[in-house]
Image 1: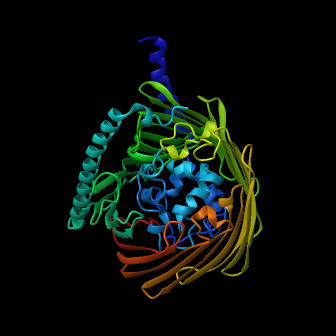
Image 2 (image 1 turned 45 degrees about the vertical axis):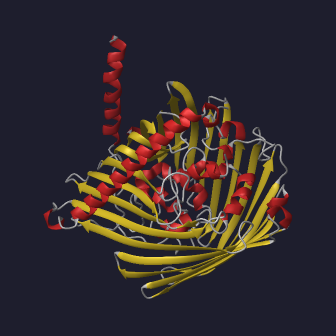
Image 3 (image 1 turned 180 degrees about the vertical axis):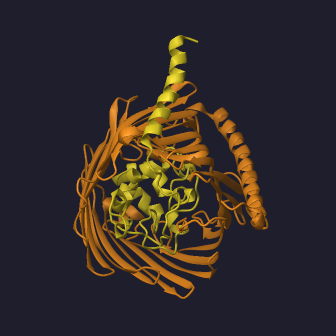
Length: 145
Length: 460
């Protein structure tokens, strides 16, 4: 092993450990201290950055990808299965069917989606790609051969 | 672009993946069976658990009923199960195990192309969460969301806050792909570094690499941001670059402004380059060809949207939205409309919306309306959802001018852990004169907190 490689193997973890040790920030609560029901408006309690997470906001759905970059915060309230309900790599039940008694939620594929998907696919196929481009597309081949 | 080489490789690849899939189904079903056994085994073990363990789980048994276009009667029965064990240490850190998956058996005709039974392990990982620095280390099947990555992988993930407002995350593993998994990638890795000010911003830079048989498969880089310059303003966005095609895949930015508590204005902008964005797809539905699906593979889409919502009275909100779709090749389209909602949490809610699509194709001209309502009656909840789409050019929609769907649903909570729900879905649409679908769902929650933790994870 070259000396430079050996130094790299030693130095990189050491540097990472040093940076972690210097940070010394308190972790976000592993479980949200207050039980939350339905779609919360985080501004009701939070005044810091978490106040932006107003789940009732009409643009929350489009922004949630960026917020999910802080997934350790999402897990304070959400189980991993909540992500999988939509972002599955293999799924046979539509999210709006799983949440059939929550019509207020912004969930894709409501109504006659067999007809509607042709329209959504034409107008903005990127909206399909995020969930079906490289995963969860087993059923597409039924028609799209 | 070499995205769908399933069709080029021929039968050998197909057989190989069918065999792989068959084995995978049985492995997944075995894992599911193991999870059920483990979950139920923990119930009598309750008194033996140490003080700082928490066990939680949820079982959803679902029966769907429908008849297909070709006359098959489908009665797939599903079991969705999630299970978590968390051990909270004295120093505030925690070690946890999370498992989730589903299995399906067809009680009627086959509901998929292959077997009467199928299943999948959606996630299964061991996690360490540190008491300091938001340190997270996960090992196993997991969903990683870090900048350009929204990737499910079998592998390792770690993130931590670093000094001076920096944080870093890294991951590596094997991408979780389903059939048609074809000649997809077999290794994926990536990283993201962010700098944050708790009050004002988070800026991130990220990269993702994947390999197939040692060759470059995907190489993406990007920046992301979350800005809060003042309390009332929230800006998010990202740009991603495909370094194999040498082009920007997407720019997507949104901004919202809430000058007063009951008013929120928002706007968004996105630019998508199809040839860079739809790269290495595994479905022919997203392989574009003007002759087959009318979409040019070199198309570029610019969307500009905006709107606002205003809470007129407590629980009553009105909202309006507009989105303009502009293409380099196809003709532009506009989508606009409004919505009124009345919502009293855990009691009653209703909403009505109308949207108009003026598109670049006869199929993209329609008026869409939706009316929904939810009412809680003691332990029971009833909901109604009505969606109507009126097409300007029925000739393009199998001569159906008006497509409608009505969903009537109800659920009953026997106690806080057990709920039974069902829905009936009727629709008249371009494929069916009359279509009737049924759905029954039995939910059982089992949570055993062995410590005096504060709240509960109320959301699934």
